[in-house]
Length: 136
Image 1: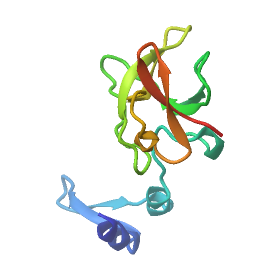
Image 2: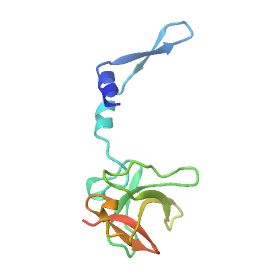
Image 3: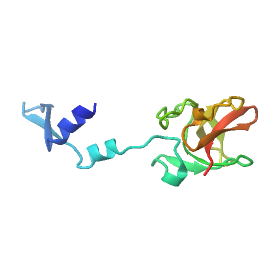
Image 4: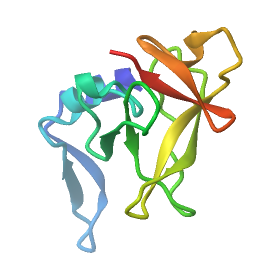
């Protein structure tokens, strides 16, 4: 994929099919596309480093730490791009007082393995399940 992106970056326009006059259709790449793609982070990151554009930073009442989270619903599933090393599963598990629903990384609080939440995060027990939060 990166090889393809690097190749595409060398072109200012790419021929993509033909229009009704049988002339080639040109599709221009946005100048920042490759840079943005290569610098992209993941969902569920540490708010201290900034959240993705579709996320908000949240802290759950009574639970130490915070995390970035995207909204979810019955028709909008939680993104599965998690930080490196995370094995906890994204689930649409949080409800805000405003009525919105949000994703969280659900982990096993009984496990001694905090690596399930990734670097600088740990699994916090809440209502019989665990939620990954950043401790800094």
